[in-house]
Image (cartoon, rainbow, N blue to C red):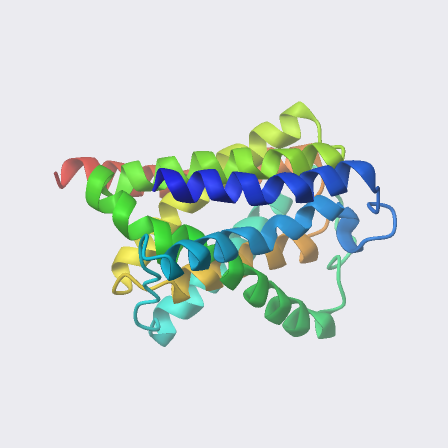
Length: 234
């Protein structure tokens, strides 16, 4: 698995450099940087290694409707809860309601590229060696660190990044749990990933530091429950 993390990092470096040299944050949707193109890297890295016989892409079975709905709902439900708890005034959804299905479809496609690497390629082997909690923490930590250059290019502050990192670690623990509960498939993980991204674009004030901190803490609640369950079941 070390080869996967090294290859993801190596393939991401040119994207990070391009993002640092060419500032598109003012013109790009949602203020993303050119470095955000790294979203395609995990799937590409996993495919390269799988084609070379170094690991496999395990897509697994499709999740049932119940798991699919639950996976999609995690981000929007907790995102709106973070908004209600936070200080931002209600200004309506950040995006037109009619645009949400298209945005969600785009986020699903982007999530597939990431989760081909994180879930279909890496989660199974990491879990076999380190267990579900270990796999979630390892992947979550790398996932957070891998995003850091793009977040800095977007001008995110230390507290914002701290809240986001907490949420990212929590998300990955939940995602590994979903992976196991849905027959070791990546479908539910993709849907949760897309749902969280949809939440970021639809929730008022989601770019604020307060929202990120609250959202991260709310995501940590189910993650801690999963962690306790995993430790007790050993």
